[in-house]
Length: 434
Image (cartoon, rainbow, N blue to C red; front, side):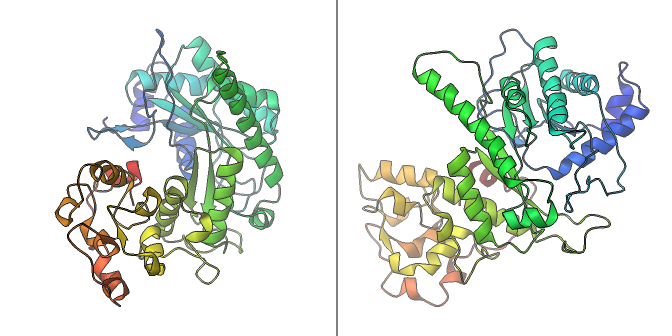
């Protein structure tokens, strides 16, 4: 997919004026970059003669097996907002340039970009204008017009406005593939301090309504009925990291609770970005981006590797290590549980070995049914030998009684430092192997 200049695209079309609209689009596309909860997965909507489609893993900011990047049009309906959230560049007290697009403008822009093969779907959010209901209704009208009038069958992700009526949320879920309700900040205290107009109960009530409706659809399907689709790609949320002193331990506890309570598909972590004329309570610089990366790794371990949120940090060490990935740090802190026999250990324990991911565990379990796994088999099974070797016993090699206790084990197992190329991290970003 070739890079596209928004200004060139708009001005070269013959259906939209290239003056005021170009300026609005530049403002609203730039304002949308602060929302990280726009990745998508899990939706499959049949075309049935319509325009566009979502296939398999859905449409998202991600890489396909052949290296292509599929993308969404990511834009705000407006960056005007009645709230004064201190961490937000679009807060009512900010002097940022303002713009607003009409429902028709967003629809026509989406269709034109899709026909030009610039995008494969839409992520639409908005500042709060007039009221939650009015804003939510405007977002729904965009999705409804795309589906009903334009027969668009591509991916649509709508930001759900907390406090909107249940009827509007119901309608949004019928037209959108994914809904998201941003939790904004990790704790109730953080929200009360920096965004007192936003209510944690109201945010979670909206999440709960989406969960209940999705549960009803699933129950109807199990009973042999054919209910209307409702947000088939699920719901997600975004949490800003580093705007307050809240620790990773509290952040992961909040995320774990949201997953369990509201059946979220993803929690997105967004490192705080300093904004002009910021409140004095906000930090003057952004947290290191590696912290955001470590939170994503820890989140993956909680969802797919059987870890509890409280295992990855402690009261004494409440933040994740910036030097080591969370699983590696956990293994080094629990050396008494290693080494384990790769030919006998349970799946749950194999998943806790540094350098062995989900796919590696599947290959181990499949291979050891037929023959004992030897040291020479590790690389062939997709195991990172340098990291995993001190923590496992194979059929022909034991790491030795003192290996796991050696003082330099961190350096012996730490990944080698190197300059990453542009696409080096694409595989790990897509499969979450740690």
